[in-house]
Image 1 (cartoon, rainbow over the protein chains, first blue to last red):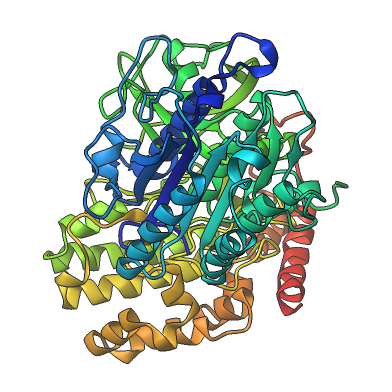
Image 2: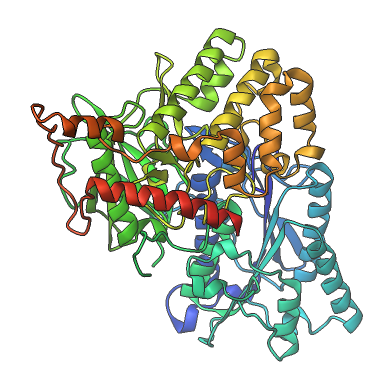
Length: 272
Length: 358
């Protein structure tokens, strides 16, 4: 079902703001946290341009919520004060981006890397926000983006098997409802080969856990028919800067784009 | 590198034009822009910015999807531009394709230049006039005219929606969105888009290429107008063009739709029964035939005269055949002789039915 003012979508960001995101990409100049902020703000700008701003008016088609998991806390990430329901109307968030010199997109999300990564607490938090949203908008689509550079030790090392299983079950329950997409973007500064939208889970426990909590990627995200031939997970492991950019561009398309026919326009008698 | 709508707006803002757009010097309209960006209007495949010259305003359409930039899609648009110019129809503005016109992130994009139509978008026009039955009845009459004119000239439009119809001060309806425009002499075997899902038949697929893609949405809009005439509170003061009256679930499941229950309580069955029957049809073509049984006859190929008149003219030797205006075609396009126009039209008729039966 497409997003409209009477059927608004919810977009949630859960961002790993830990100390390790202060590292640079492969020893270069740009730090991971800056890339995360840049691409997240671009994602939000794409929502303004493609979904919210229409016929000269702001339409309340997308509610926005964002949290930063860093240190021992999960904090509200947007400039506008956190409302009781933990999401903002389009009018509240679309106008709150700060224009900054040298930045293509206005800034909605800014943070400084610090501390550890309480992602499990973050996922519990967003699960509560989603439950509240569902009570008000039962049929509306929900799009969650998790961005992290955490490794096995950081994310799962201190968790028992029961805790890990419980978290997978939380997402299984969310996935059982229609219109829920969870894009998990794991980034790495180590220049490892990225695994992008896999169809099968990786062999290692960490990679498989992130695969399990992600959902299938809606096919409308892909322009290339080759990419739509099999189901692909909304999941990237070891994203580099280019992959991060591309994946979040596709992610924003999933929110605002209506399904398109896969086949191309061909003249009668013309061979493809 | 993927080009986003924001990238396109930035390129327009920076004036990254490669070529003369054929409209003289112009400035870009920023009056309703956001974050210092140009004013824009977003379509499914293209976005529109407004250029202002000393004497006129123009809509500049720029493709935002890869599929809209493909050579055969552009060839088709070029051909449609020629046909619109040749036919000189009142319900669609002329437009011209200019290839490689705008440089965005190192890629040269084509643009479509068309005169800016001064009019209200249909959605807001209906909302603003919801308590003016005369104006709404006038709209209904104009929809009948529009449908007949479209079909009579061999045209079809695959994305009739409240966003793609403008209402001039006179009440006249003007369609926009050239990439959804079809003509019987410019056949396609798949549709590039499925149109707005809250106004198109839910069984429509990319294999539906007409004739009569415009009919279901026009008849649905007509029914909605009858409802609003009876009860103006059925429409919001500022309706969302994405789901102007129904949403896509209402059309998929009319039997359980509260909105349809309200419709049935407000207007005579003669207005809603055809729509409900069409929604229960097994294919879009079957639905179209229910709404307009003469569709295959009504959607004629474009000829200067009906065949009977042509035969009569040819038998009168003193009357010279009317010389058809020569149109400059794109090198890849070949002008179709009359006989071939008929052949393609007939093939469309056969093909349209068989594809829908699958």
